[in-house]
Length: 582
Image (cartoon, rainbow, N blue to C red):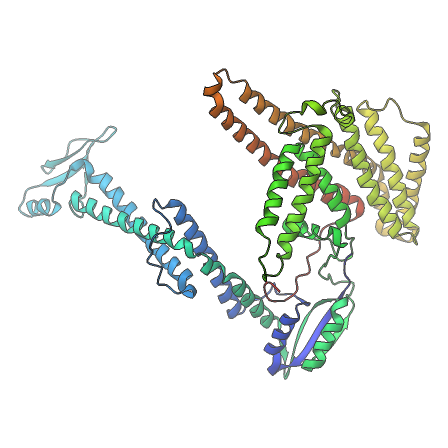
């Protein structure tokens, strides 16, 4: 469900404004609009956090670049934890300066290297004594370089200024600069072992940013300060009790028509982990829309399994999920796993288990088949050589997904005649399901009764989508009805991507298996290349499967299904003002 929200206006004595902000943070149930914060304290905290994150990236990069043991001694060992990020940034700036100077010196050495190691001071002395010494570069590639002892140069030759110092001196300076740069890189790499001293400060810096933003949002009029936000309806009693204790004034009201409260989704406990997926995708339904967590998680699990299409890959993900459960198990006295970690582990366990189940049903394991399972009924049905069964299954999944959306809409509008239009759309989708199967040759014809269903459904859609009083404002929707009907046909067809992408994944795995096993070499000689082909091939296929999930499984839920359900994902998530980890 989407938790109802109340708009909050909190008033307090101006002198107690900061104390009120602290109390709200401790309460942790009020969403404040902190997006417009621009105070000096906020900017300072934001800059400090950005510097800390940059310092962490610098240390990680230095650890990759260094050619020595990163566990060695470092000049940063004596730096306090609070000053480590600043020291890292300073050292990196110094290292960048050395690198820039070294690059400039290399260009100079390349320019004067062909002239050899001579003393420019001696050349200047000869010029002062009247001997015309000139350095010149001639035509051709590479250009010829030489010194002339005359006033004029041959045709095509260009005079070059004398170098600032002799070549050997420049080379010595370059070696010194490179040594300094390498020394700082080694120090930074060794300091990477203390990176937690910087990352541990992230929560505190984020809290400082949020608190500074909240202070900025606190408005003052004379002796009174006030701040506005949103609070879940079930948290209002706690807020009122806090207001009595702190002598606050509260104005709690419903959202107005032109206001968009934040969306707090509270799915059934079994499906609560899907909120982590919404957060990871950065999507949230609008406050007035529906919570589609349950069908989203159910169908996403099915899409995940079919798009990966291989039980072996699912077994790998499942093993990694179980390893994650083991590694994140809190030690005695450490409390519980973080909620976000627990949610993601649950999701990966469910998705991978579904993929393993699909592998059992289709007998597909790393692009190969288990001999003893080839005659199973599900394997024979899904492995139909014409692929018609798989396409039928995809269309069936699609129509069930979309009809669910329309019937759900109809039940929500059951006290309004608009529910008839939604049920009409469900009938149109069923008819289109039969049309799609007839087009691809799965069905040989359309039952006569389906034409009557289609006719009645169209009448319901046309007659009850728009009320007579809305014809002036929404009448154009009726003109779009033919296009919407054709769009429904396309929506069902789009679910065939589950079959196409899953089949492509299986075929890629089969081809890499064939490449590896088909090497024309003695067995003792082809073990290594065969293992490399299998590792690279299946690794690439595994990565492409992950990409297909992000593209196709997400699309079918957030576009096709959501369009029929009326979910635009235009909301923003409820984010209470609280301490990190609270």
